[in-house]
Image (cartoon, rainbow, N blue to C red):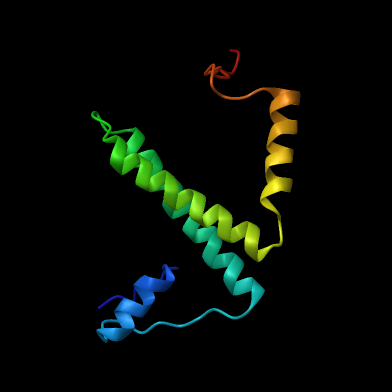
Length: 111
């Protein structure tokens, strides 16, 4: 069996341990934590992308995947001591300076 390693939620880990289904470790070093978070944000973003690319989007599924992305972002901010207020302020500043994505401008290379 191929070993399966990924960052999981606390209660999921507790459930696996209580049923003796998997070994669970707690990452200790900042480098390990950042690597796990980097993998997790990519995993969750891919799941959002997969939902968006379906012929028929199920909003409940998409909303759950978006919530997972938000949870990982929250954990990244918590781990790196970035306040939600600071994050929102930077997002607002970037929006003011560059605008948002809601008008769907798409850059195409000139030939």
